Length: 453
Image (tube, helix red, strand yellow):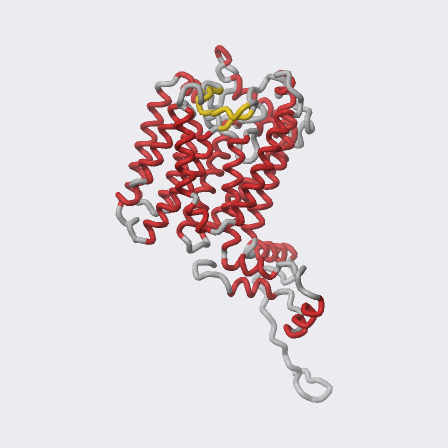
């Protein structure tokens, strides 16, 4: 055995055994571990929701300006007409988002019934002659004077999320959700009332989104499979009858996967949406250089703005939009899955279902995989009535992400010290000892609730 200069045998230092087949200095492994640690931080969901929603909104404003110029000029309006209206709606929506993100959970629950009552009242006014307006064959609008209109059914989505979450949370606190009648009543009748008011105006796209929210709430409440399948069967039967009795809806269903406009140009919009995506290539023709928006593609700045995005920004632009929505959906699921508050779980799950389902239906219609439902792309398409409640819902998710114990602890450690004197800061730093850069994660982990991983 080899010895040292002192005659004593060398001391072997204990080290961590290297992973089998993976070198210790593997850069891929190090990058994976760093990404995993960053993904598991307490504020990940908070930053994903805030950053993702703002990026989608800003990119949407850019695309609305690009896609709506020709339509505005054709209507003898300034080229920036639709952009200015959307920017104003985004500004008001930003105020709503900030207010909702700062509200406590109790205030959100208190707003559930007033928002529901207001949405139902406005949806009834839509059917009153002289008050309600018909746009593209659907009477779902109320004029606010001038060029401003409001679609109350968009606020019905927010009302169903808040009211349904509060109802299920109160029933769970009383342990009533084990009985199927308490799970269904009055949630399902109230949802069907909203659906009936929407269908009176002929807007089946919004009705599909409300149905998705209803099923999302029932799934989060732990509805049994038989009950879930029963309600789903009734909804599918009603939807089949509504589609079968409407030639317009039957023609939209027939345009799935169409590559030619067909007789009487029935599938004109669907086919030209595919043309726009196909001509974009990898990086697009350039911002503002779309050809389809010159009168070929109807609703280029609303329902089919994703097609214009693919034409001008290419596959890279469309994949970026999809990635932002995927991140937003993941963050919403993470907020709903890591909380112990039943209201937060139901509300976060309802908002995530709403935004994800609407994005899937809109993008699926543009890609020719689903029938054209006439729903806008959340936070992206033109339309203030859709943007305002959606941004308020995003504010809900931000508030719920901030309310997480670990996120609260992490945010508290990042608060600025503007009101404290430098001497006090130095003395507190000396009393605390040497600075530890890795203490935030340890303290945040200690503050996590028992339901977190």
